Image 1 (cartoon, rainbow, N blue to C red):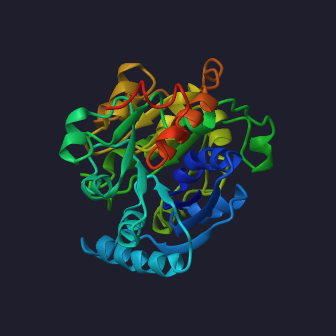
Image 2 (spheres, rainbow, N blue to C red; image 1 turned 45 degrees about the vertical axis):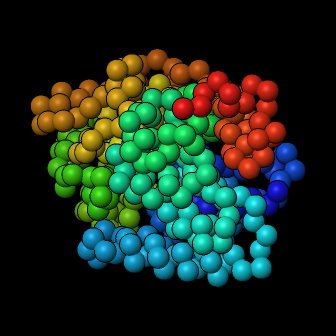
Length: 355
């Protein structure tokens, strides 16, 4: 088959790369589009994916209608790109522009998603022929988004698709000029512009201040937008680094003493690797994060007292054992193909985990 994958955010490059490789291994032809946002393009280039950048993110300003306008503009770009192409299946991790373009062209659309409080799920889930969600994703949310009968639950985290068998590179810090004699803190600021975010990032700023006032630390700051990098430009380079290029995220986290993010993939990567992870997310936590909190793999920062009590020390103990990524890749690939080729699912395929 001819399968079109759309990458609209940097974590999706890592999540979908092993699925793309498995689809190609099975003999399918994969074409890829991408969006200029949060180093998505640079990361896809670094991973050797052949892709066509189309469109951009609306940014932090522009008002409430800006995301709608930019997404519709991207739909037009995708429709133009699709002319003359044979596409049998569209796949993404909740690309709304891809879902709309696929519907307008009559292309079956499969989406993955792991956060139930995003209002735009109403659009992507209803456009999709099949929706892949992690096991903790609430049944009530699937019903609310019109996806209860077409959803397939997969075991584990989406981050485990690419963390299976991961082995850190011992020279990674030295290669990127990151001090090896400090407590490495990796921080990613919140997407305060997102419709599901209910704060202004005060908790994250407090956590950053706490880290900077702690002796012996070095921070790698990973902005989502260029404007966020400007907020830390006055911090001395011997205390904080904003990488000029996309880094290997799992390798960076594997060397960290702790990770502080405002929700999202990076926290779940750290949790999967056994690296202390803290979330300063000012919104409704998703079911996946709530499960990680219950298992002690992720800790919440909800107040100034939580920030003050946050331990900033070298990590004790080794990384968690590598996840069973190969098994999960097979499961997810089977479920994707079964959206239009039911016979393509392996014997163990999706039968045990449908909603």
